[in-house]
Image 1: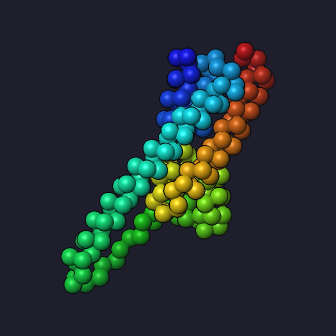
Image 2: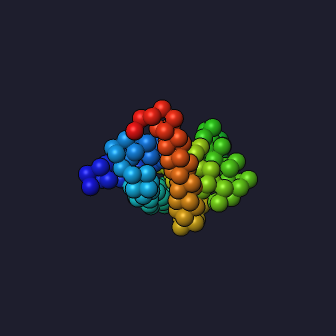
Image 3: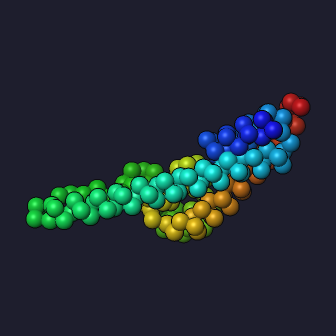
Length: 157
């Protein structure tokens, strides 16, 4: 039971890369997969709701600030997510939509990163969570199969 809890915590903290950790604490592969998925679900929910709350506060602050500085000359404003990660996330969303971002995002940006980026880009909350969970499930399954293949190839069990 303690090993299952460690795998859930690792899934919360790391996301998909926690699958080998679940296997290393001698959990059966399906149990390790379920534990990591439970942790990743907690990670996604907390990240999306926290980022959504922060985004709402920031937008409210920004709209009040714009009212105060309306008379000042316009300044060159940076758009949100102008860095390389933001540009890559925006390209994925523009090309593939929420579904593609949910499937590809965990592999490119990690579980926490894709949840935060999707929320920052203003994607619909529940669609984002659903498709990110589908993507995390896909990549955890791939990681589980790869880990099992490596364990069998090197005779580590």
